[in-house]
Length: 286
Image 1 (cartoon, rainbow, N blue to C red):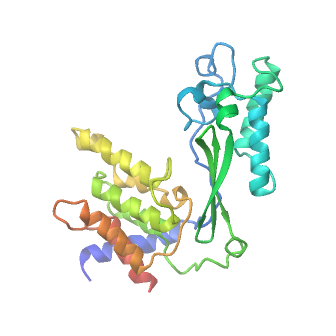
Image 2 (image 1 turned 90 degrees about the vertical axis):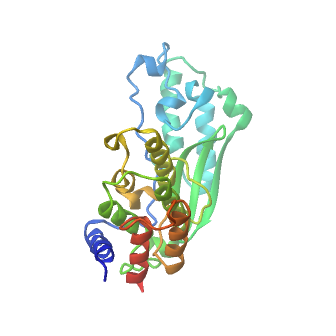
């Protein structure tokens, strides 16, 4: 066994010991909310705006006060999708903000935001292994995302605890090559891994692949290595950042290796990198 392979195997086994499995855990976009106490952020009228409670929201909607009818519509959409409103979810957040705005006289009880009235709110779902990913939108902009597991997966029947998952393999790569700056080949490999884990094509807004691509783009312009984002920065807590996860299989490792080598000038995988970690995990899972 080569030194690189031994290193990856060691980090994978160590990762298994310190990481709690979060496969099929419900999660939201997880972005910190801006403080609501700032007069500048809330506006001169003190209204709570969409941008205050949903940092991913941009454009004109971010500056709009959350209105009671917006919240009521989102509550109805969540109830249709989940059978109830989600505790701490977008509907609850909007209701709290709208109630405060109404008490302050910023909005009327029967008022709806113009963008919401025109474009509405919606809840979409995408089937993935073990469950479905549900995304909530206000006026076309995502404000929440959850993974709802199937009954068997929720009971633990769909998970083999002896197998290494894609999220764990990515975290192992973060340990093994953590101080190395993120390159475009790394971002491509992470994107391929996320697609294999979630079953969704394209980057998930605010997801692991999107963070990796953003880091690679920024690193291309950074003049000093000390200013560059590293693999450790991006891949720390990768298991929690993935909206879904699965056991690493040979085909998963092959797809990730292809994506990584295709985006490198020398067409080789980085020793101890994402592709190497996935390959090691696939071998261990056998």
